[in-house]
Length: 328
Image (cartoon, rainbow, N blue to C red; front, side, top):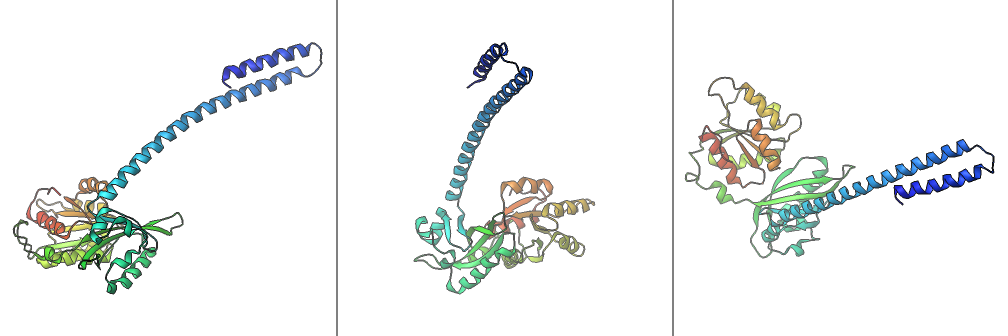
């Protein structure tokens, strides 16, 4: 019933009441006021109904947009060149992309419902289970190295990036895992043809709150003759810079007690003398959302934590070998 129908309905009632007024005594002013009130309520109901229709249409459009976005990101997940998979809190695989299936020499369907740990060398499995169980004690993304055993193929070392997704109660609901191959020959190969100059004697300051990440970066750079000093916080980095003059800074972005953005801003503020400049690269578990902010804050380069080890070496060499901002 629309607004016109309501008005016609109440006009009819008024006419009937007017006829009754001629024959019956009563408090007609009160009755009329009540009818006016009812009429106003009906008008408001009609307004609310129209507003709810508009809101329903907007919600439908938003749901359609969300569905398109979900399909888009699912496509990115499935066709990413990085091996990506999702497990429950116990490490049972619920989603795996094509790169993961290729890495493990199995079909995606064969991976679903199996234990992630079972694809690693037997000697590593207990350590991996322990690390997975300890995820409840940390909120940061973890970086590990283990030996994976693909079906009907030779074992090889992989780097793992493991992040936990939690519910409102803080309990782990699922794990998001990325894997990349670590080629020991690649990370130790001569780099004269790809790097601007020798890295022997180069000094690098590494800042990351995760000990595994600091050890991992150190292990990548030291075979090239790089001297690495690694610290676990922005404050520790500022203290180290009082007695140590590195050629390059490599810093995580998301750290408790002072993030990588505030660190680089403080360093840049201290560079008051001409020619005083510390080339710096930001490393992060995120991509585009951190890149622009990192460059704006004062970093010259931005590198994903899942990048190949040789890419880290190249970034360090590039930063140490040129004064202009490298295209990374």
